[in-house]
Image (cartoon, rainbow, N blue to C red; front, side, top):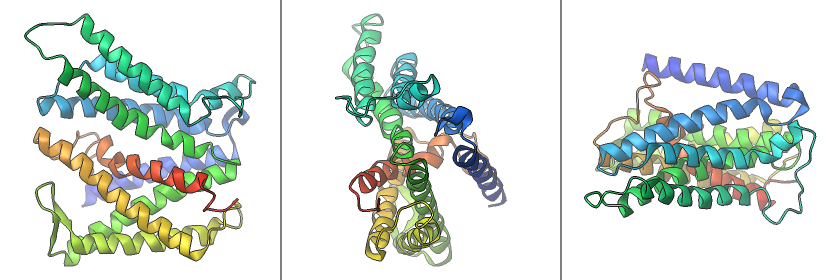
Length: 299
């Protein structure tokens, strides 16, 4: 428990520091630039963990092709930020748009995975499972993870920050609520074959914490950052992010059970690996993005 608290404190301190710098003192005057190094680092570490999980589960793939594919998606989704860094403006009327950039990277990554297997072909080694495993790794880490950058780029710098922080805050508060309530009064298993520690009581606690976190967050910053969702939308936001976060958590648990692993790695004492931190966020970033582009969260 102590290691978990210490690791969480360090991560929160780093995140708060970077977020504060990005909002108050944007690097080179470019919104989002402070967060890019952390984004690239976490993405590469998570991709490496995903490759190892797949290999331990008997689904080996081409490591360099997966890493390059994830990096390509990371670079493409960062194009609007990098363009601003060199004095250019990404055209809003571009047919690809911003959300289409990761899709282009995903398509290129699939081609890259096929290319890698062409030069490694062995009649004794199945090709299709390797390509499919690589595609899953790139999509899971690269494509889903790209929504972190997409969310940060929404609207004004303040709105983009509100969107990003709201997803992280609600998701992690619901995670914490589920953990503590489940530890205290959890009796009925939620998914015993995938995650024996998760309980129905914990899920209900997570929903309560998630909804409260959403209401408190927008009550605190909504006026200053020009995002004023109604109370009903705040509760819906907290509910949906909590449920989607649980699905994301169980999705990674599925991969770990298949690989006979407890954690994705041991990078973070008490917490496991990078994927163990990002598992729920990889799913909630996508749904959070949809909430914000729908206009439900205010303008």
